[in-house]
Amino acid sequence: MAAFDEIKQDTRTRMEKTTDSLKKDFSGLRTGRASTALLDGLMVEAYGAMTPLVQVGTVSVPEARMLSVQVWDRSLVKAVEKAIRSSELGLNPMNDGQLIRIPIPPLNEERRIELTKVAAKYTEQARIAVRNIRRDAMDAVKKMQKDGEISEDEQKKYETEIQTLTDSTIKAMDEMLKAKEQEIKQV
Image (cartoon, rainbow, N blue to C red; front, side, top):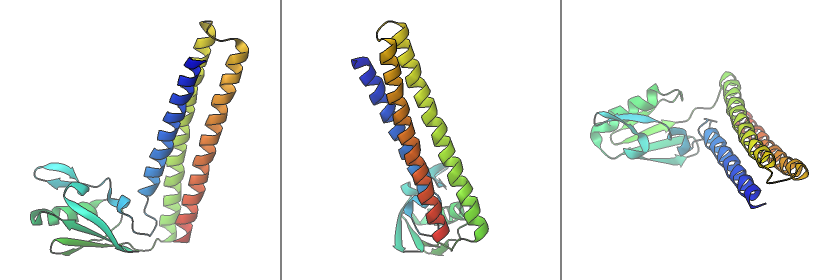
């Protein structure tokens, strides 16, 4: 019993982490609204090394369709501007001395379709990860039964619990995808 509880808790934790990772992936998709998460993965050439943007300046959202980056070191302003311009985000930063303003343009139909496909791809990757987690848990339960720790009836019951957890996680991910697709269409 205790061994299965550990397996179930580990499975639940890993599935929650996968769901959180999907949320993070979704937050990085540009939907026409300004979000600091948009620039989270951006790397800047600073002091001879690639450095995350958040380590060279403060990102904020002064208005709904505008981001601003307050660069701490004036010598890095051009590097930050270049990193934003050359990213795949399709943004056109404006340099104001130490402050970089980034207007967020509305999405065109082609870009909306592309973003919807990317969101679907992220969701499918997360589903695959959840199914792999399920497989690991099922294998552990089968091993417990094979080693004589649990009966066949208990094995079936535990496998059903794991499948129920998997189904609810995937359903939650599908709902997140639907919400993200709606957000992309509305903007």
